[in-house]
Length: 284
Image (tube, rainbow, N blue to C red; front, side, top):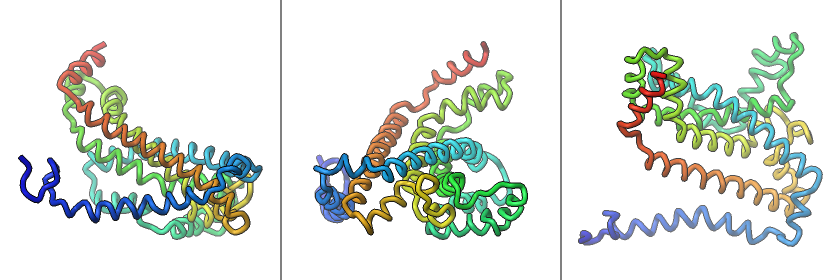
């Protein structure tokens, strides 16, 4: 029997539904209002213009490249933050997660003053014939900069939760650290890696401020879909609304997929039998 003042089996007072409903309305009403203003009869025409297609294609290419960079760099970083005994590890974690709270324009300025033509490292790269600022590569760098913390924070928590018992079993069988990482640790982290990768891709796809500051807005070169939406807002509001729907649809799909990963991760909690599977696989 539920306690008085509780809502079903939730164990919380019924008044909690009021601010919860206000929070849902705060998110849902603006999105619904925008969807109601979209000229759906012209939607295919608006999203298939040359500028829109070029911006969407560029966003997809750069977001995939940035997500790949996040995986290559973020997986080792998450392992180090979760398990390595390093002095100043808390300061290192703070530095890595800093882009989560920095205004995007500040992130872009940081990249520009470091990797721009007259930047700390950019000037040296210029002498070698490498120019990053205001290029497609700059878009990838900006997207990686702001997206990396999303993958790291997702994976680090999973590494801490998973523990080290299966790695210890593999080590007692004589497996080398690289073999343990490849055949035990990474398979256990696949659900978290999938959700972290999806979040990094979504953040890359929606990146605006850092890209505009560091890479500029050149059609076909650095003008991603968010930049195209910003420009169309001034000249063709209907096109801006239609392109915004595309980003909303992609974001909704990614949110659904990441929720599925979380539910699946809970349903597939490691069982003792997995240790036996690891032993058998490493003994082959």
